[in-house]
Length: 160
Image (cartoon, rainbow, N blue to C red; front, side, top):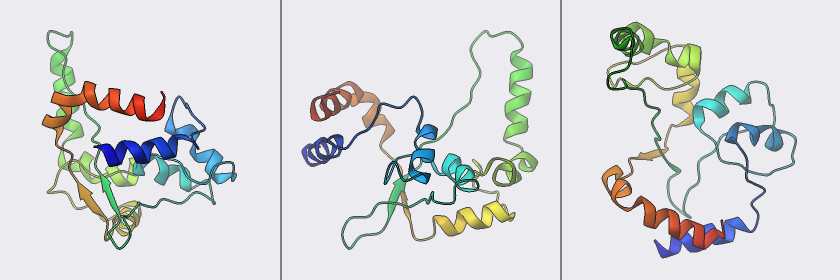
């Protein structure tokens, strides 16, 4: 954890934030006001279509593979909420084969289902974008257990 916090401390010296959303950073990169900004692939993929100077890249250690992690979007049902049957129908529809096949075409994202292989132009471009990129899954149980100490360490490192 110490090397990561030291790295974040160095990065903080160049921080132009805070920003209410990473979506507001991409236009700054496109105009050359920022050299680099963080964002998610789905959002930046859509933004890049109208921002010719915006590119998506993945960091890599010297001599290593480009790496990223999947930060999943989530949906769920609220206990005892009104219209829960309609909510369940919506979730069932969103996870249906037909809807999942359109995630890339309509939303520029990746299907949640592993059995769906979309073949539209966006799906092909997204597959090419992450070709050779290592996608690791964080240990969410560890994060859940230690989130407070991780946030405290980040605040200390960055002066936030």
